Length: 317
Image (cartoon, rainbow, N blue to C red; front, side, top):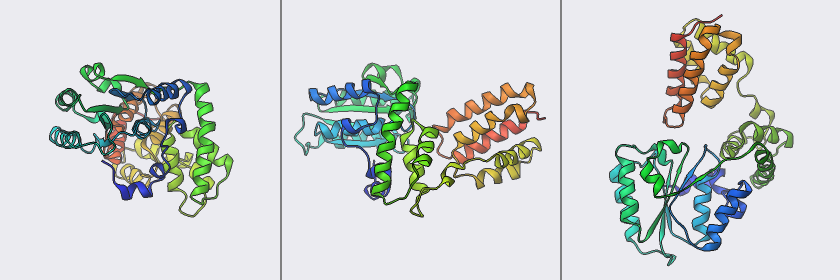
């Protein structure tokens, strides 16, 4: 569940769209959700797609526009069976403040729920409270959601084509310019545009990066520096020499860089540093830990584990 004080501080919460019309979505998706608003009827839904696309924002906007009471539960934080049962039961048993036909349970990051125990229990909750509650589940990986939950929800995928991505990026550029003006932050359009294209379509990541680098009241080119060639070369040197201590120190000193960026830079420089017969194994290791990063609470530990496995199993030029 959300914390009001945190929401007032975070830009992604302060400037979250409240209507479907204002959400940055491909036209077909926006039409689907607008039809739900226009019909006045909501059903159980599973919203799936990579992080930062606006799944939770859409779920909240639907509730706002239909004037429905809702509760937001983050499965990665409150995902055990007893917590879910007591939270949902307490919410479902109280009278709606808005007088709506039903209430809505938004279960964020539902793919964090244990597929052997908690997800089957959730299926039972959906059936138990079907008379007065609707459920909206969001997830990054739909294959981690059990089939009985798929069958009880309308599955809506947040996908974008390359052409749509360019159009959405242009719309988001206008949104971000407005946010920066409201926050009284000076910025250069070229720098902001480059940042958007680097992380698109993870709009949340772009806003978070802007807030993180705006403490001086200005967005400068520092936001684009990321991992320099010199920096990645230092990491590769540690891997080649199997220097675990300095590798771990490198990771600690670069915790402000997303692990996905580190993994990608290693991938991009493989042919320069790694022996040809080691490259396939390194790629598989990177892909495995990139996937694990979506479910790992300690990103530093996950990155160190990835680099340790690469260090132990690879040969270098």
